[in-house]
Amino acid sequence: MQTRRQFMAGTAAATALLGFLPREAMATGSFETLEAIPASVQLAPDSYPATDIWGYGGTAPGPILRVDKGGRLQRRFVNSLPQASSIHWHGIRIDNAMDGVPGLTQAAVEPGEGFDYDFLLPDAGTYWYHSHNHSTEQVARGLYGALIVEESTPPDVDRDEVLVLDDWLIDPETGQLSGDFGSPHAHSHAGRMGNLILTNGIFDNTMTVQRNERLRLRLINAANARIFVLGLIGLEGWTVALDGMPLPAPEPLEEVLVLGPGQRADLIVDVIAEDGGTAYLARADEARSAPQVTFHVRGQASLARRGAPAALPPNPGHAMQLSQDTARLTLNMEGGAMGGLRQAMYEGEEHSFRNLAQAGQFWAFNGTVGMPDTPLATIDRGQIVRLTILNDTAFPHAMHLHGMHFREVLEGDSLGPMRDTLLMASTERREIAFAADNPGDWLLHCHMLSHAASGMMTWVRVA
Ligand code: C2O
Ligand code: CU
Image (cartoon, rainbow, N blue to C red; front, side, top):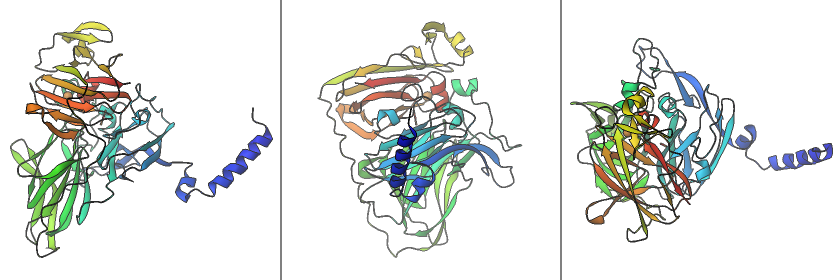
């Protein structure tokens, strides 16, 4: 037990230390807090009632967190929800203990409790954070936000806009979220799709720009399952980064940009619409297109446009050669509606598809449904992994690896851009490769959150 004297001495030392802490840190203890809390916000147009959400800081998306490249993020996560929760920092080459996966890297944070997240951010780029417990429900309720890691030399743009895309499933009568987060239909088909599509939590998101202005748009797909197909009208643009990682050279965006759940893209766009006109980030919905963001063009930033943009500075330390010592793995995705899955292992026993469906489980990786006790593979640190993924289902899937970016292995063993989430169409076979340079236990799952909740989940161990 502490004696009274030791306690007093401790207090004196602490008081002396506090004198050196910045004011915000003093107000909340050591770390700034990030609180997950129920709130009511106006998501639908004004003629509809407000919607009850769960949000970081009471908003959806939550606050934009900005850190310098190589910097450190420290936040005390406070759970003021009626459910246990955790935060995953999607796309960050993070210290495994901070990855936010209950049951794998930490215990879920119970209501009223907290957890100190404290980690370094080695790579610049557009990332995001979101709940990783009961994600089908918690992300659908609004628990996500943008995490921006700033380049030391940012690109030459007039504005930098974060655009978080999401679709909400709302009852138009009450304005409230549909509470059927475990819908067997959504789980076994394409996932939970919303009927209210927002940007930064705003319906009909609009901004005023000037002709010839150059914008950096940081697009984040935070939807549970929707694949956004986007195009530019009155804007001319280049993709400069995918999933946070700079492309070696900007790629003109001529047709559409496809963003699966969890994926991000950084665009640099020039406003080419006339003064007084309108430009759009447009979304293709089935056969029609609809505005995702509307840009009113008012005035002219300069007489002439700038030249084509330069590449963003690369994030170093991701070198990989396929000729190095390589582990080969295969992941066979099966199940879902209209799939051919007859039986699979679930909780240590073989079950028929019918029994699995009754338990709300529909998908298997290599014949196993849900998170297995043993990893898909234990990989020596530094090894190159080549993983072949076969989508033997009737639906697309967005495969996300925690902790490390990968590259797609293309024809002739050439390598595609670095990504952390791979969108795969039905029946596709694709191969990815990554350098297993981040030690720890890392989840590999479908980011269509209904699919992850109903079977599409595994992990790898880097030892
Ligand atoms: Cu963005 Cu395991 O998730
Ligand atoms: Cu999926």
